[in-house]
Image 1 (cartoon, rainbow, N blue to C red):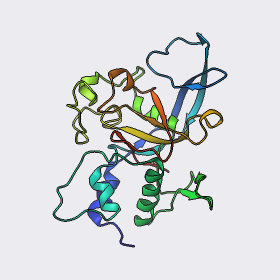
Image 2 (cartoon, rainbow, N blue to C red):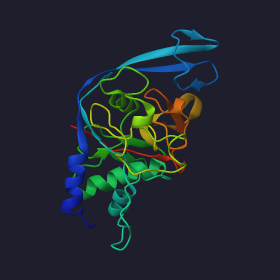
Image 3 (cartoon, one colour):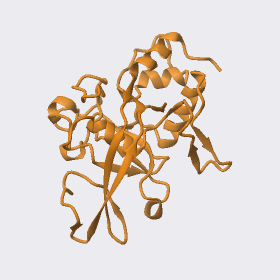
Length: 250
């Protein structure tokens, strides 16, 4: 297998931002039949209609998170699909499933000489993560929300026009990463432009293997672009406004 070149390796090293440890609260809404994502409309604590709020306090250990979502250029370089005569594309990679994302993380780890985080059962349906491995992985649901907020306490870390591409300013398309303002931890495009896969199951009891994605996209309304908004998708699902961002343990 061909290893990555020094330019790509330097790009990856510079992109990974150190996220300090702390505490994050995840808020869910449940009834006896289904699980509801928290979002900007569900801000009243306790009972809301027939929904009961469940609030979880989670400790976040220090970790690394990429300042940009994975770009089409990086994805194709690592998969060895890039050609010298193809224009470099710094828009986020989209139309990738959750399985595609974790396989990319393993391939990137291997080419960088790092230990792969993910292993599969023989039937391929169950995936396990080694949190002590030094390779690339997806952020957890809690890590993503914590990193998105950075030092802010609101639904967004800034005015939406300043930080996100969404349906009212995107002109119906993806944009290059890093063109809007970052949060206080120098993370760009955490909201808008493209949804991002996370590691976690959405709710195994109700939705089986469905996984969480976060952040909103170029096609999303403003209310869907917030730190606490989450959606779900089957791990084989891919669409033109869903990508991912790299994380690492240390």
